[in-house]
Structure formats: C-alpha cells, structure tokens
Image 1 (cartoon, rainbow, N blue to C red):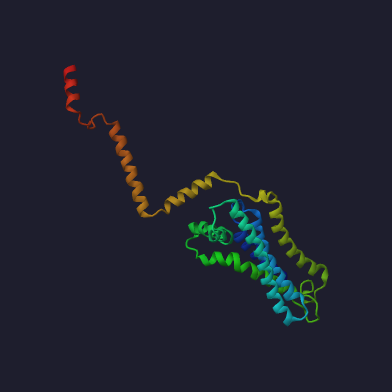
Image 2: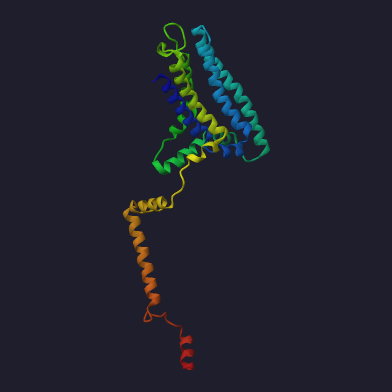
Length: 264
C-alpha cells in the first residue's frame, strides 16, 4: 500500500501534467516558440524541485524551511527573466501580433482553457478555476507530496522508501520500488516513443458508430423531433406533388396564354 501511494501520486501528477501542459502543446510551440514554452515549463517545475531539495535536503529543519521558499521563489523569478526575454524576441519577430497580456494568456492558460472548453461540450459546465488548479496548483503540490513521502524516515533513522516497516529488501522492498519505477517508465516512454502503445488503440467499428448515431437520435429533444417530422412531411408532399399529373400548374402570364391559343 505504501508504494502504491507513490504510484497514485505519480499517476495524478502525470494526468495533470498531460492536461495542463501537454494538451495542444504543438500549437502553443508553433505560436510562441519552443524557447518560451519549454523555458516556462522548466522554470515552473525546476523551481519546485529546487525548493524540495532545500526543504528535505538540509539537516537544519528551521533553516531548510526558509531556504526552500527562497530557493523556490528565487529560481522561479530567475527563470521568468529568461522567459520574458524570449517572449520579447518573439514579439519583435511578429510586430503587432502580440501584446504582453495576450502572450502571457497564451503561455499560462490558453491550452488548458481550450481543454476545459472541449470537455464542457461533452460533460457540461466546468468552472475556470478547474483549469487554473490543474495547471498551476495541483502539479507542484503533488511534486511536494512525493518528495515529502520519499524523505520520510523510520524510527531507526532510515528512509521509509526502501525500508518500509522493516521488511527485508529482497524481494518485498524491491517489488514495491519496481512498481513505482514501472509507472514512471510508462509515462516517460510514451513521451519518447508514443508509437510503442499504438497497438492499444481500439479499432473503429462502423456498427458502433451507427449505433451511437441511433442512440443520439433517440435522445434528441421533443422540439428537435418535431422539426425533423415537419421537414420529412414537407419532403413527402413535394415528391407527391411532382408525381401527380393533376397537380395544379402555376398560372401562366396572359401573353404566354395567347401565344399558346394561337398555336392551337
């Protein structure tokens, strides 16, 4: 259970990372440039890692608390200086296209807000706060919780990670550690070589698509059904009128009628 908790943190962190940072990343890179996008990504997560290293790496816990916050904020500020520099260069390359406000929105929120919009068309209303939390709050918190769990110690002063409940290292601790490593491997390998998992894709079934279409029609509102019935009735009337030889002919202009009488 202890090692599964790490896996759950990894899975939650990877899901938030995929939703908040990877979704539509190709469009974002094309729009802002790779230096801006990946620079901001490294700045955000790198600063949290620096803070965790100071919080859980220094022996003096009281000093580590302040050092962690200073390292986190300082690293983030230093990284953002570089990000802003590359943003300015991008603005100079495309004069008139960007303002600072539009560019920061494109960088910090647009991708996850697009995801929110796409999901809301299927599941319904999603508050904008969800998008902010998924991208800027939950991933750093999960990273801190993971570091906190890895830094926990037993009563004997050993790290709990690898010495949980004093079980023997082989095979129990190794099995638990490998579970965590395997979960990380699945994520990293999908980034490096995504085609590795292509055979997991479910083939498209035309019968399923047809069934879904019928089901959607069955769930249509009475108003939609009434409109469809009216359109169907109108088409039937048009077809019957075209096939009926006794159907009323449009009134002819007087000049055309006189010409036809003379010809007769």
